[in-house]
Length: 349
Image (cartoon, rainbow, N blue to C red; front, side, top):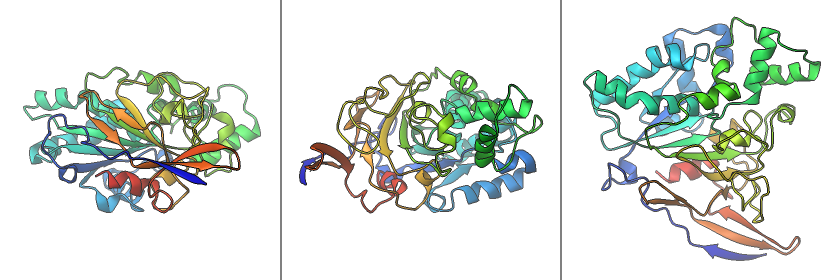
């Protein structure tokens, strides 16, 4: 094995509105993903907060400055926004939390919640006589901004639409923990692919959405049969990568695979939703594993560098390794042989 180092250093991250700030000055705000158990339990606000803290406990909770918790049995444009997101935005503005700049760290459906938040926060706060938040960027793990085909399946099963075989029902029950009913679909409706892609699809805000994706599964591949292309067991690559359209994509890049192999990806994503930039991919990381503190293999880059709207770049230290057994180069992020995906991403801050 021969190594060829490519010196890709982390440059100034998204300096818009905060050109002189150090990365360590930015505040981290967490926005969790879909929590299936809440569909049945329909928790009150205090339990929603407890569930939110538990969601991030494995790694990010102790490394964040604030959270936005929301209930999965509600809809994004309904009570999630009015009763949970808005009060937090108001408090952040009044406290000046994001004055030095905020980085929102999201997981799964938190990506979709945050997209709606980003598209509306300035208008909401200005109408209340408050200063809009200075959101520097989002770090989106396993982002479901393009929806999930499992959401379509779950809602259809709940509504009794179509004929469903036992394997499909088993896949839905693996994901949700139980079969849904028509009275408890909540945010699953927002996760339907068509609905997700219509929600704040063309934002006025230019906040960069930086993506971190996986290609493994916690469900022994059962759910993957219902997701197009490569997936993380819950969300397909068209969504996690931020592709401009749904499809059976096999990588967030046209030049490198999830396993780091440097070769043309005929079904790699080449066109993206506005301001969406995939950065890291991990073949061994599942949907939930991306935010946990367990090492699941080396991580590769979806691109050597990401060019942002203001001309600044986000770059990652990586090394290209030659494997003579199959005569190919593989690109791995430096340190990812021991660091988890979350640790690699946190090192940016």
